[in-house]
Length: 354
Image (cartoon, rainbow, N blue to C red; front, side, top):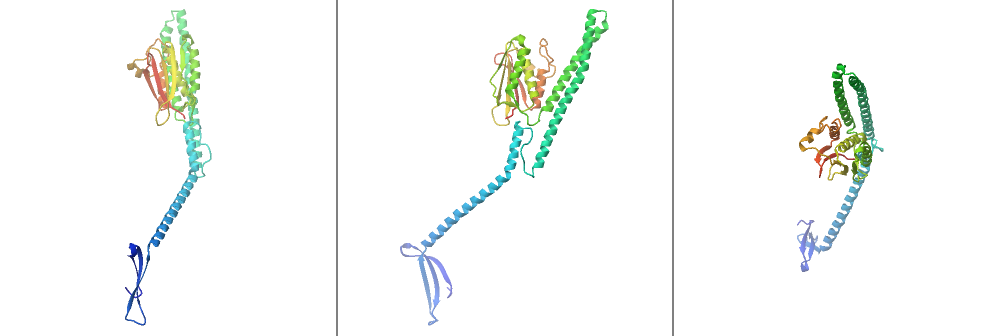
């Protein structure tokens, strides 16, 4: 060791106690040629305990500081994202059909986007309304001359019956009546398609199912009163709702119930429930009759427009075709099945509003 150097090292003392040793070489001015080694030792356990205690306090302090920093960061993020969460809830309300616009204030940076989105929604709703109005006007414009032609043909047939010598009317009138009926069928078909396409996809729509079913059953009871059918409806949850327009739901269920009442022997039943499982909510509606049913090989054909299995039952053959087209416009499905005992069971799956 140098004369001024201090060496620190560990050692072992009595009873194997750990020691901290400081060692230094010193000289005396009286004896320059002599050197002494000076050692000072102390029990190191006190120092080790103090170091361990300091480390523990330091670790706790750092952990507390980290927790405070994380809490502060979380609070800052939560406060910063709170307006966006409100916007997310507004979007959920819109998708669920409980609102037709994004409601509530938004952050200054996002408000122009919200205003623009609401403007698009309003414009879309106006376009749909105008499209429906134009479709109705077009149907009225076409049906009016068709009605005139039909009346003229019927009048010609009546004159022929009174005067059989009018052979010209006999040849022409049946052809006119046939073509008028065909034209009316085409108008009804395309009008239904236009309404279905216009109503599908408009956000913010929610129609309670139970009142619509009850109203339609009352109508069917009056329309088919002469048949004395038993119209049954299972208890429908008041919270079940269709994510679409009320006219479309009435058109779908009205055609299904009318078709069931035409073919039923004694009873027609309606049931509805929410489809189980994860994913977007789906409304499952079942309409069942106890009539002759439809053979499996004919079920695809009856969904085509104008196809009628039995000409003895009045109708245009558009009912099930219109239903299938309108259900498909909403991304739903329509299935024709055999009822448990006899008859036809129609199962419709449509988007539900929650």
